[in-house]
Length: 259
Image (tube, rainbow, N blue to C red; front, side, top):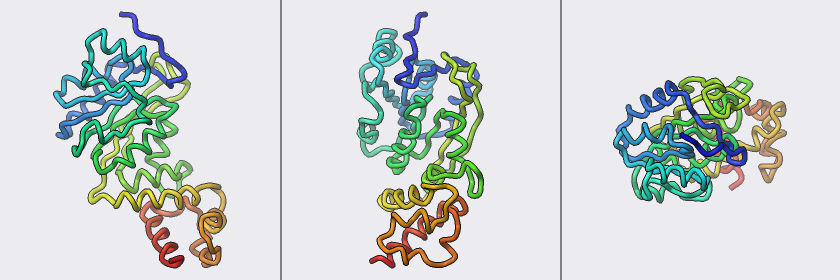
């Protein structure tokens, strides 16, 4: 069967390894959430297995050639196939007022943006299982004090408990990427923190990690209106030393003093 060619502009690397596909489905089987969204179905290798699960499936595909392939080969119907760029749509509109699981072999060039979109919709996404470049996966799961710990680690771990499920070699894809990949599972924390607070705290976290070797005091000078707020030994630390929850306390402290 002739598949459409992968496009570099879409960051496409089609997963062909049957064992990896089965592993992903086995993980998805555990959860009883009836609604499922796949991002980037491509040629439908994972999609076909997801359909067998009997869930309400929506697949978001931006590539018109892939859209046509999925339809002409009767892999998806009009209701199941969402012809759009995932970054341009409101995921919650696909299943209004209902929870849904997010999954997929995410296009590498927008995987971090998909991750942020997941976080903004955390009140509707109890689980996410996605494929990332291993480098990105390591940042998602990184702990304080490690070289991979970053703003993306903190943002994810405020809302989810992330686990790296397994690694995938380049040969499992067509065309093979130049790097290793990893499957990551995000399980939502309960109770979920207030999402408006989460959105507000983002700016602080990004400033704190702006220059990795600098202290909180130096990195937060451009964040606060009054640099005198940054006095004390606490601000001699680097952001990489703080637990995710400590950023909430820091944000609350700074805002209460400024008020």
